Length: 441
Ligand code: GLY
Ligand code: MN
Ligand code: MN
Image 1: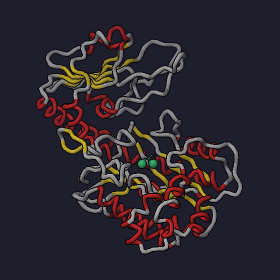
Image 2: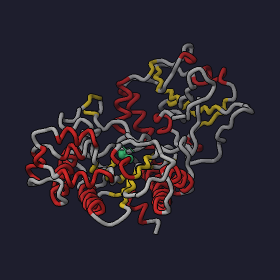
Image 3: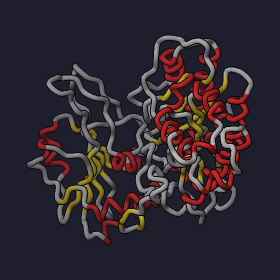
């Protein structure tokens, strides 16, 4: 048995115990999980890329996604997989080979959707998880997406098994290889579009498989947090390059950002300082820590960097107390990572549900939950020169605490983000992204 197959066997045993307990608590006899279907463009017959239901993916992490397929889970029975593989000469479908999951399921191929409703039907009290629509109106779905069940599953999904961490590590290795190709393409003078193509080629993944739109930002575009336009023109001069791009492996995501300066100087120095701060914060990712405390420490660190590099004219403590860094770092420090790039459950209060919102000063923070062993988180501090936010600071009572000439100098560089994927252990954190880059050498 391959190492991944034995990790999956161990993972699936634990997963089944977890599902058994949750179904008992919520008094369901069976769970039906629908993988989902592709949406069709308005007034058209073209489909959007297929995005799988993460609850299906959690049970059945195949290397390719099966649409319109079902997992039937009943405690005490081998889980069943009904995979839709029609005899269809218009489209192609991923075949079912021997894979890590296949020995753990009763696998059935369904070639005609008209049969699916009857084959999935279960006895007793049933819950269904998935994005259903009018085509399922007459199906034996039982309760659809009951919150009591979802909250419990989401709470557990934050804690990754060794199998899941192996998948996330592989997603990081694929992305690191592609990041290296993208950095070379930037140095070779490629456009944003050309860099994107170089990335996809090196990753062996196209947009439908990548976990999110690649963000390929040259110069000022780095100031747009989710810039995904990808210009074909090559601007000159090229000052900076920010790339936020991941990869997926069996549905598990990586989410990595690197920023490069075209030449030495102040912007390169700020990148180096932010990189050092990011590593400091990663080292604080420890069991029992509050993510919010890390977010606050990051703001304090960014204030120090902006004082040291001449952006703030006051002391770092004063800049922090006055919230000046919020202009330059307006997003959250990071988020849970797993089958979704912004994995579910980062603000969940308890196993039974509830939401803990971030404090008013940090509305974009996605993670308010205590850090626990087995979680995988991104740590992604940034420093950006965003026109609209700078204008507000310039018009505020704190404008005199900023050296606007330094800001003007840095503004054409756009911004900096350094993002790694980090596993919480019982000791020092494991940085999957740095590990993957180190493995390239
Ligand atoms: N790539 C999106 C994010 O970093 O959250
Ligand atoms: Mn991220
Ligand atoms: Mn990212």
